[in-house]
Length: 346
Image (cartoon, rainbow, N blue to C red; front, side, top):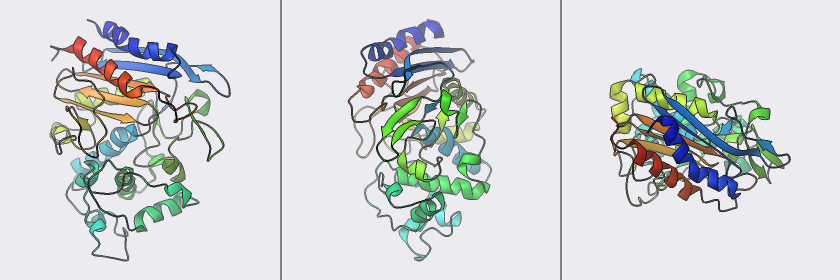
């Protein structure tokens, strides 16, 4: 099948979900290693306060796709350049980390432990309820005595990686170049709406949905990046072709470092892993497939063996996160169709 035919078939579950009103809108994009691209979309960018149709140029809040598209890639670029060591202590790059206790275990955590969610940091904390500005948010993050326990998927770890990147580059994440079709500050008029936030008192549109990222000024290591479908596919193509990272670093990134993960990315698996979100890319892709999801309803998967990537972008939290939309089943259904139709590719 052609890429266009695969996209047509794989988009069908998403089209049904939109037609049945389970999600407001959805965009599916596929790209191959040789650059062939196909996009399908349906539904609305917003339902309230006005109804606006979804377009190909719409900006989606990528949520935790920020962790892999921006944060993981930037950390590994620093590693490639010899400026960061994966197994160095964080205090080497953030000397003021928990600065009042020089021997604290927190200061000895490594970029590898954070990228693989093995540091034992908490999953998430409502930092936004305790700080009043981005500077105080960073200070609280760095000086809080975070408890270290069993490994769990952690936003806190990626917040720390965001600070590491800022310290190494000398600029805020929100001021960094992120690639065409990606942005930390999209045009709100062209952005897809997310939740009607009770804390902020409005529908979030062009402003980051994640409360902690908002408290950090809109851009953080765990969330804050927005993307158009072609921007997300462009990133995936760059990763598949070696334009973003060299072969040795790609090999290290995609090596199974834990039962569920390489560096940053999930790696295809079967079964549950304690402390880890479920694998959402379906069971029909190759074993050399990496992926990640975002809370707002986004996801990106890259089958490196077959040279094909697909992104499913939805606004499933609009106008509320407190509704069961069937997003987990939808992601798996789409991935299974892509996997079945690309079997045998190399």
